[in-house]
Amino acid sequence: MDDQAGIDAGIQQYYSSVFDEDARLTTRSAQSALEFVRVQELVGTRIAAGSRVLDIGGATGIHAGPLAAAGHHVTLVDPVEEQVAKARRHGTFHAEVGDARQLRFADNSFEVALLFGPLYHLREAGDRRKALSEAARVVVPGGWIFAAAIPRFIHHAAVSLGKTPPTPYPQAWIDVLESGTPAPGGRFPAGHFHTAEELEAELDAAGLKHIELHAIEGPAGFALEQLPADDALLQAALTLVRRTAHLPGIRDMTNHLMAIGRVY
Image (cartoon, rainbow, N blue to C red):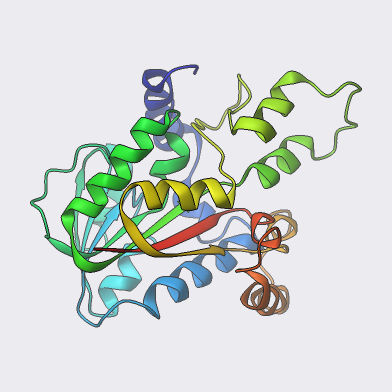
């Protein structure tokens, strides 16, 4: 999957027949609950009541459903028909097939846009700019954009898990750390892995202001991905990430980063 067409095809196969994204965000591991709680609190504590929310790359509606239940008016867009079909089963928000790089909605149609997936499935910086610019276009001035990325550090750790690093390090590992380029041949249809500073720069280039960077799961997230659900571990991990999520360097030690910006 060297080019975007290959990644796009991989996304269709991966999320329709290989990997259960719904389970990943609910029951797959102790990390599932941690990610869910953190996303909901990072978004829910900032946006106004009754906001119009566009969930771009919203998968099966795990985040869209609770936001709709909280009184927000949610529209979900995802490129995978099978995931959209699952999202429609919620029955509390609109869901349709669409591409983050070319949204069909008019300017200033929403108060909030979520991009929890598109940025790490887009290889080229130009495509990521398109996705962010499209999100900014459909959000009203003063509105919010929340964008997730997978950091290079945690991806490298995941690839290395249980392996003795060879000497010298493979070029593919060096490419991930230096440029965010995924190693070839992976099952996950990855496009790019970010640093926090790079993610911030991409939101800035899209014209967003007052940008914040936060770890979603934090330093305990990777460990919890290896363990079954456990409420005591969840509470400990939440305490840790709430205290450290904004700290440069520490914020990269997480399964997912979140950038938060305002449209002006």
